[in-house]
Length: 111
Image 1 (cartoon, one colour):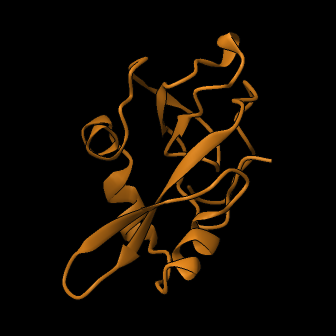
Image 2 (cartoon, one colour):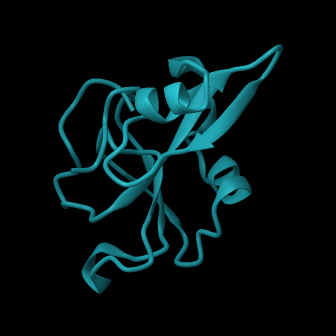
Image 3 (cartoon, rainbow, N blue to C red):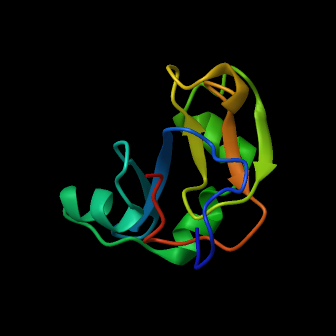
């Protein structure tokens, strides 16, 4: 995620994938509800990387970290890439993975 507005569709309860620099590669940290990439990475002792987050912003990478049982699609929002939580309202696509078609952000989060 980068600077920008939340998903105009109002996706409910997205769980964000967090990218962080490790020794020589990018690792993923899954954020909790209402937690930004920055916060999730700090919780694990790392720092969010926009480059790493961009690398995770595709369906193949999302499927490596989430079930994506309802599929994967492009969307927009600073709380993405993400998987919509299983208990979200049906209209928001529970268990659907979302890759952002906009810029990525380490500070975006779903409220």
